[in-house]
Image (cartoon, rainbow, N blue to C red; front, side, top):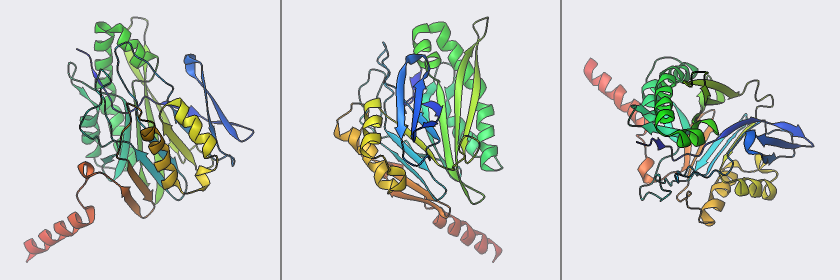
Length: 309
């Protein structure tokens, strides 16, 4: 049985090296040379996905845009998922999801029924833990590591080619967490990397990146997920996008891939903007509607008041 791979694209975490105001990146052994261009030395973290072809027709394409500054976080995503044969699903997918009082975007291996691994169930469980945002992320790390290792070891034994393509050549799982913590806009990335021991057992190593933090000395980070040609085109056509309207930049990045009729990318676009005062959906499809938190709080207070009287 093959595992289900996430509708979200596989992502590489690459720390920027700024040369002549252009961040240059070389992607592992795949030999792709990618770049993010920005004229003010502000892009510090870029998460980029090279084109990837699987002999099993697993399709991991998507279009995601995340930008973090000291004043706002803007996230945009398309709504299409594809099955194992690369055929688009008719059901629209919510790629931007709640994580307690914050939000997440996931890429990589989403579930493996044979081993019981399900990343979204684990995320839901971790989001209900007590503590700070980081405490919940730490809980997720602890919960997902052994489950992912079990799924990867099963996949390695039963389908070595798929394992190589989806767990060794690229990281099998990555999660971006973002929101407001203690009055600060935060973006945390957790990358789960498969490591083969001498006895061919798979273990998972967790790479941690964050903004603000040592990865992000200027307090600005940019995440783009999509086909290489569109990332490069977007950078060429919008060299100053981090200084412009980030909402429009996010919409443009996703829309250009929808307009090109990329199989793995489809409308509508969901866009979320987070400031220190809270989160606001700029646009969101009906399938992703959430309860009104403010009304829910008022309702709970009303119930407690009625009980006291």
